Every structure is written in structure tokens, then in C-alpha cells.
Amino acid sequence: EDKVVQSPLSLVVHEGDTVTLNCSYEVTNFRSLLWYKQEKKAPTFLFMLTSSGIEKKSGRLSSILDKKELFSILNITATQTGDSAIYLCAVNNDMRFGAGTRLTVKP
Amino acid sequence: DTEVTQTPKHLVMGMTNKKSLKCEQHMGHRAMYWYKQKAKKPPELMFVYSYEKLSINESVPSRFSPECPNSSLLNLHLHALQPEDSALYLCASSQGFRALSSYNSPLHFGNGTRLTVT
Image 1 (cartoon, helix red, strand yellow):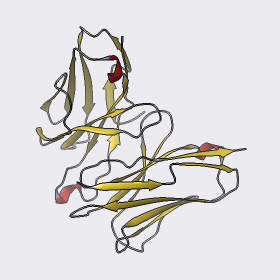
Image 2: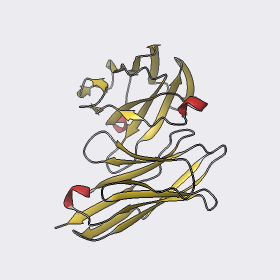
Image 3: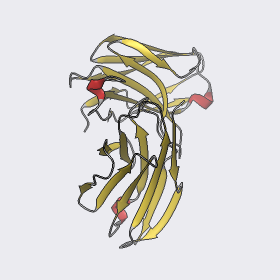
Image 4: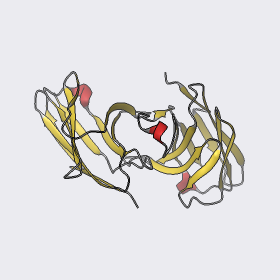
């Protein structure tokens, strides 16, 4: 069965800090890895990564995939309180999520 | 607002009731999903439909019965639920599932139905 492991499970930082979230996976027939942000309701899509070493960027968020070491990282620079959320990772095989990282950004 | 519509937004039901959750999308997606989410936990996959056929059933108890009448609609029929089934039920869709067409296909989620079983 596919396995998706996220770390850390919980993280508390102050505004302006930079954070790195990790998602490692073990799957057969890997196609892509997806990151989502969930605040109060529906998860919203952030990035889809299919190729190693190519950074995806959106504002202060960026993500990269390492298909050799089987992991992805999500970086958030200059964090703001609005970044407080659960960040979820899923592998585009069975669409099962990892446990998520709960990020809290304090003013 | 999302492109995946779920109704109702909230539902309170007794353990002997029968109710249904509904999900609709008009993006032409051929895969639809039900997830269950408890407080402070990630969404947990329940069912996946691909081209209106059930592809995945994650050993969900039979008191949850999914139905996909057509490619735009997904229902979840509920009967004889337990209080521990109280949760947020999320519907999602994607272009495809486990197919080449799903290669560039993230999930699009509805806002969920908050279910309380009394």
C-alpha cells in the first residue's frame, strides 16, 4: 500500500520566520505529489510536482521534489499569521493524504 | 466558493435515520471521491469512483453506501449511523484516477457537510 509521511506534525513559529515542511513517500508507479493547504473547510490546491529538482513557486511558497530520495519539501518564507493552516501532502496514485503538518504562526 | 457543490452544509441525524449527502461538479471530471475528516485529523479516503464505477472502497462500513448516478453527481447514503461517525464529509473530483489523464489532475474539493449523529 502507498505510504505518505509528513513531518513535523506540528510547528509553531513567529511571523517573519521561514519554515520547511517535509513529505516522504513510498509508492508504486509514482506519478505526482500534491500539496494542499487546509484552513477551516475545503483543502485548497497549492502545487503539483512531477519532476525532480524543478522548483514550483507561488509568492512566498515554494516546493521541490526529489524522486531519488522520495521526498518533497514545502518552504514558506516570511511567514504571516494567514499561513496558519494544516498543510497536506498526497501522492497522485490513490489520493491518500499524509497526517498533515499543523502550522501556527504567532504575531 | 468552490466548483464542487455539496449539500447540505450541516446535517444532524439520529441513529435510526436515513439521510443522503449530495455532491455535484460540472468541470467534466471523471473521478469523484468521498473523504471523512475528524477534528485535527487529515481527510481520510472512503470511496473513489472513476467513470461512474467504484474503484476504491476503503473497507468502509456498510452503513455508508455511495452512489454515482452520472459523471457529475455523487451521493453518500447514510443509514443506522453511530455517534462516532460524526465528522466533516468532503467530496472531491479530479480529471481522472490512476490513468494517464490524471497525471495533471489535482483534487478539487467541496466545502463539506458537517454531520452530527445523535
